[in-house]
Length: 71
Image (cartoon, rainbow, N blue to C red; front, side, top):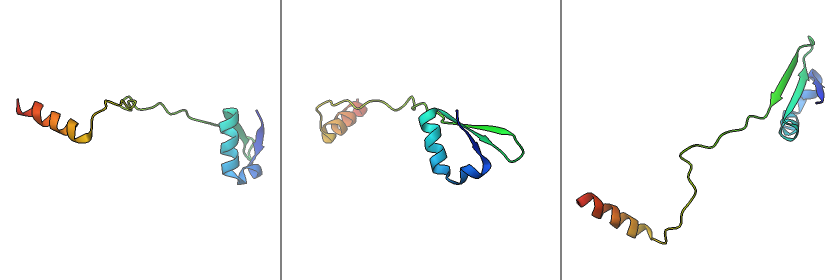
């Protein structure tokens, strides 16, 4: 893992791209403290479902819902 100095981090977007490629980047502060920047992997929403082609038009679906609600 490459260690960047405080003066090296002027280009934040480049630093984030580096973290994206290499999973993490280490930054050394002026006082000698070390910090790690990591790419956080976002978990998809449990409600994000794949599209399913039912072969029905919008109107057919709406009419079906209306019909079911009238029962």
